[in-house]
Image 1 (cartoon, rainbow, N blue to C red):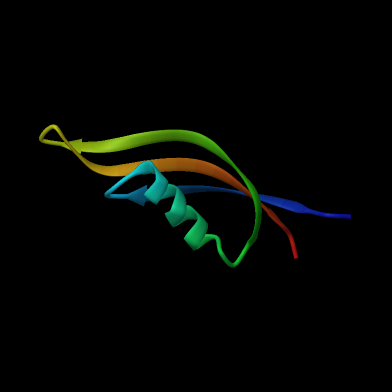
Image 2: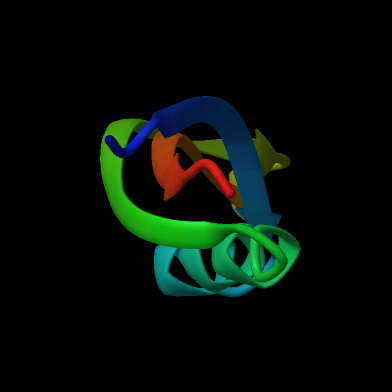
Length: 64
């Protein structure tokens, strides 16, 4: 029997949503990630300039 753990995480990048996604995967590299559900994407704006891209995701990993 396989047990899957779901962890909700937030990734952030000053450059792109892809960078935020890569940040999540980098932080979860010790886990056996099997999938991810993107809950939301948003940006932080200051003085009409995007300062940070953020992704909120639920990450599935196999429990060892």
